[in-house]
Image (cartoon, rainbow over all chains, first blue to last red; front, side):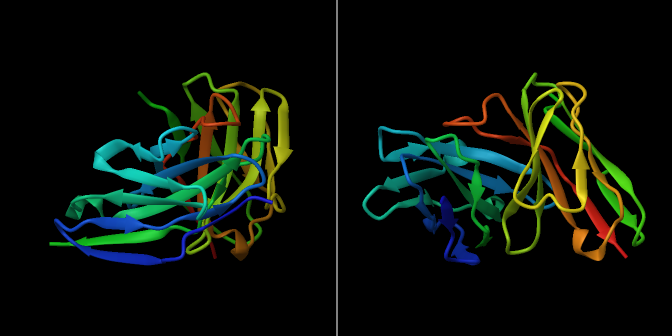
Length: 113
Length: 114
């Protein structure tokens, strides 16, 4: 069965510092991995996705994600955080056998000036 | 571009009342989904549809019904509202249901059952 875990409910970062939001997954085949961002009172917005190929994926708003097959992880990163990055971030996984998209529980990112 | 549009944005219901949450997409996507979001629980799939006239249950379908008479619309109905259905409901759509295709989300309906 597919599963995805975001081990941190909240991440606090100072503006200008690098940020990491963690995600680990479990699928039976090859994974398709996604990061979404949710701003207050809005829906989820697609940030980036991993298919196969480069282990470092670049997405919207300066975010990137690092895929690590041996650690079954897909951590979201940004070199320099902005206050406007404060939001709820969701990792999601789908297997290559036609399975449903499974979401993690979300990580609240707070960037302080 | 409108994308996925959900109405209403907010609603308060009394226990036992019924209502329909509306969802429409203008991207000609065949696949549509309804999720509920509860704090700390991520998103749970309620129902999904692979095209007009075809729907199927997701992870948490009890207490809900759906229909899909057109490609554009995918309404979610609550027949007898219960406090456990207090949640934020999101509709999403995608061109394909598999692989690397991302889903596109509406802004949600915030529903309180009192």
